[in-house]
Image (cartoon, rainbow, N blue to C red; front, side, top):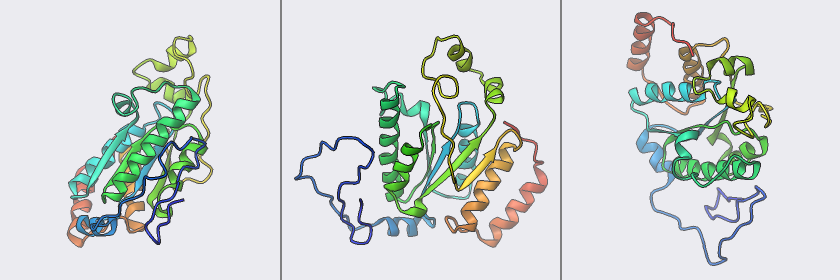
Length: 240
């Protein structure tokens, strides 16, 4: 495991993946640390890991949250499941083994964003608990915020503008999560969003307040007043 106190990196891979690194590869420390980057950015970097069925609202909420955080000058980046498979994970299928490798890669990339002092929002179905636990294990305990975007399967199917569920039910798409591939719900996520009941704005507010309450971001009096005014002027009428 990564030794955070001394800053040296031993083998962090506990994810049943063979480590092919040479024994001569060692971690190189840098003068500018994660703590100094966070201080510069006036925030605590972390992974906000959105997990849930296709159509539950993960990407929509992550996008709305990033917009809000960007407007108050926070450093953020979104890693989206579809976008990642256009490049970094473009060589992977949707088999169980490749799904694990997909999440392993995303986890390692997310860890680099955290080290860079950035708040990274990851939107992936990530159906297996072991994969999500792996990502949690490679960063500090407080640097992984699991957000379960919960939604009944039937509602996810009704929202499916791409027609993926229909293709899965007719056999055109194989190993589709929720149809012929399982989704393992988180046991104890930091945040649960039931998007069958919550609007986009309500979901964003829940996450935003969590980040403030747990000191990931600091908000000054001027920003508080601005938020009160915006809440007054813009009714809570957004929905998924």
